[in-house]
Length: 246
Length: 313
Image (cartoon, rainbow over all chains, first blue to last red; front, side, top):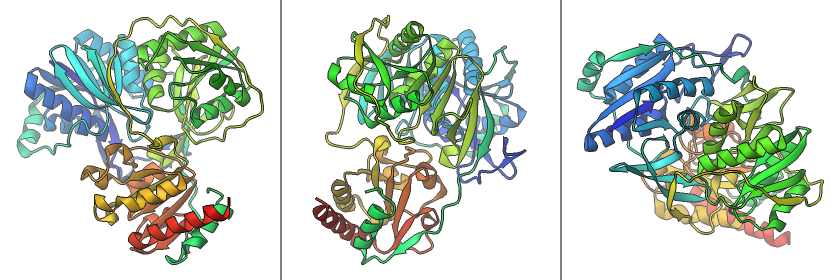
């Protein structure tokens, strides 16, 4: 089985979020980048588990510049066989998805996996866009994935519950919590990752459709009003009359 | 010219359906709704009250096959000459809107939280820790609206409902089974949420949380550690790597308020924090705080809500 896992970098979950250049750019000062948790914990690890059972290969792909290679090496250390970096600024989800769709079409994969969203843009767009770009079925927010011959069985979130569905490969799947457990790379994996191929590919000619013009931070909350633990009637009264939420 | 709204009407019309029609109406064009399945006409025509001029129903499609829905919506875009397509940013939209974006070469803005200001749309980014202002370069535009971001406004009357042939094509995703827990309020849509964390010490103590939620008509949620150790199901986990919610009221008991948890809930209008630790970072993000033991405070709060409801009837 040939699996392609889409990897994005994202700021460490504890990063302080700030902006520069007149609030038009994310302030990278002091920010530690990680592999987007959904891509790493769920998509990549499940891909490795499938390979361990059925054989095949796991490739990771990202659209970004040379500075992204550190997070790509981490994904290789966890166990991916090779990495592909499409050498371009990841301008918007459409641009990134069409780049990956072009590469995947040309190189033939049985499954393309993404995380359910990145923790920086939360768009949940890339998986569906790749699928449409490749004219393949797409199952979003899968929490379980089993392969049986040419058929994939998936458990996926629906409004107010879950659904079990089947699709034939090739297919695109976005991965959510429940799919796999996080793996910590060991020393051997880290050493091996240094020697694994990291191919740099020039971008296809794609025009982005959207642009982030500026960013803003939420306004600071006013001080928290403390209520005595004995006085829950007062809290209910405040929620009704002051906050007007009940 | 029109604004097309896709609504999933499989389980009746959720509040988010009223929100998206209200939102579309504010864009200034005629609002046409497209939906699939066998929902009652009388239910669908209610969307007129929020500003829809008609509802198109593709009855031959049941279920949520994203490729089929994408083809149906594309047909509806053609037949209405719509320039803007609006979704609620829910589980179906997350599969369909990106496909449609590629198919129509229409820029997609996910997670909008306000009506556009000129051509700029405000969205949540960095898991609720910041906002972004996004523009779309293409003529056709797709916006998916985060639930609970705007209030539905009723100012019209019922509208017409028409059958629509949307050329759905073949199903590629075979449905095996659907599991829906009865009587639970889906978390992303809930207006009131009661949540708890490790401070509750064990899954057997969740009855207190459920009692309060039931009394309020709220959904229940939890922090990541609690879902990870299996005290609560994963779909209840709110936070950076779980569900991001923006209810009117979020009550958190025994959750310290790590930055990753705050990311999932800081869109809430009002936050109440119950914790024994005065240094818990959550108090800084709270509107109301109770410094006390959840084991005592939660039952007391449930009683107070009961009393309040009795005196307000």
